[in-house]
Length: 286
Ligand code: C2E
Ligand code: MG
Ligand code: MG
Ligand code: MG
Image (cartoon, rainbow, N blue to C red; front, side, top):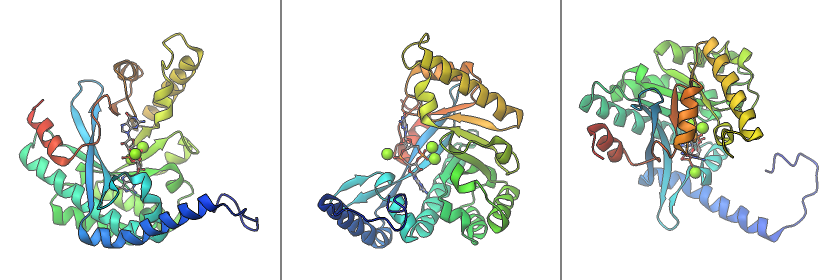
């Protein structure tokens, strides 16, 4: 939030914030050693077809098994990794782990052709080496490019021009799928997105949360349903797939299917879980 305050403003001394800053710096300072010691783990969350409930993809979500603080979610450290630049190495590690796991699933369950979807930070997308990195990871893992999807946020791709824009096209040319994450929380400029080699939109949680929140007859629920309906139609008109995020109830899943969303992700279909739980699910174990 330092940036949000703007330059040239006087910050009021706040002892609590001082303590928070020290804790943040300590966590940030520990990131490179944590990567070396292998303290990061990748969990996977199912992305399910709303038509027939089959698991078509999984999203790779990084966690930090911290020796003192326990299992930390990405919200606790991804921002720090972006600020310090370590996100480039950490992101590469996640990409490599995810592609190796997906290659294993392809070998054991060839018919499932499970896609792995990996989050790409803005700094990674802007890295001139990103195309070479992705190509190397695909070739060393043996994962076919069309089984990898990269998720970028709207803010990471808005205004993309020059080299970063060429990178997106070259990634798409490799056969990698590109998705816009948390769609609807930023500029939501579909006209602009149409010029990017994007394959799918991930509809942000708040829209999904809003539909039928207070029952089918609530005015707020109706409004969000109409927004989702319009977004799905618009996305399909420009040949984009739509994934609904944060699906928590059967009623939401049912309505999203009626609104022609293609896939869904959220606690209703399964929480993020270690790789072996995805393997068990592919085996058809309960
Ligand atoms: P995201 O990419 O939008 O990931 C979806 C988040 O929604 C995950 O949080 C997931 O656990 C959470 N979620 C799952 N089911 C539900 C549900 O039913 N309801 C709600 N409200 N939320 C649900 P998580 O794992 O804490 O990740 C948070 C964010 O951290 C991700 O948001 C992504 O932006 C970032 N992130 C995670 N892994 C990586 C990574 O490897 N690299 C980068 N750059 N960012 C990552
Ligand atoms: Mg979280
Ligand atoms: Mg994501
Ligand atoms: Mg998301």
